[in-house]
Length: 338
Image (cartoon, rainbow, N blue to C red; front, top):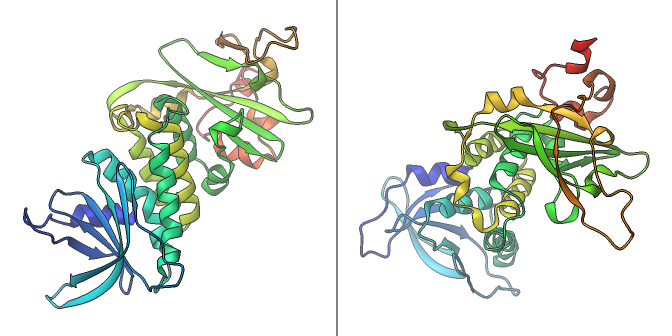
């Protein structure tokens, strides 16, 4: 779990009608303080040095940045001191956005030096602004689709490779790309393995490998949510704040303004992993390859129940990305049928 989120859960809000904040330092000697205001909203204070390139304040719909403020900090034991700090607030009332604020901001805060300048703090706030702006845009994919991708990352043998290979939705036809291997993740609910494809997803460049990970999901109130899978990823990437930052941005870009549903949609992890089948793109039925040149963005649904699965033994050997994402407890169906 993100360190800021952990600290926030340990804080009690100050009395109502007060200007005080309940705060805890990110660590011994840290310049970052996690705070909670009287309305239980998260506030981050970052002790900073004034520089010539001092940033101006920013006020967005759910986020504000005050680059220079004088604050009195009362530390454990009752001693107080004045600090000059940048103040970053999540002003939204929704707890889901509070959580996203702390998860997205924690990697940058953990990577700050002991005495950052206001300009340096402003640069990391820009990343947070990118996340919050993404959460106001239309979704890049469904909550269900994002859940399936996070499932693979959270269970990857090489989670750093999986995270680095995770592609921005707006610029790629596949979800993961490393070298010549491209992997598209498809998910569905119910008992029929049916997915929607763009024709271009099944037409990889010459010399490349294009594979489809098909995941069948089962809704379950006791299942895992997107924040649950995100927790697992954060723990495994605890020492890689840059990759955790990448995950936060990608999740925001995918969820868009559908972020509320990230907490309410839950699926069974064991069932999903057990359902995974890997398919070669060139084995999947398609239409439109003989279409006129002026026709583009051809999209169709395919029932994959009869499509033969790919062989782990033939494909995964020597392919780091495929070996990492292909769950080890998923049987090699092709080998089993021989």
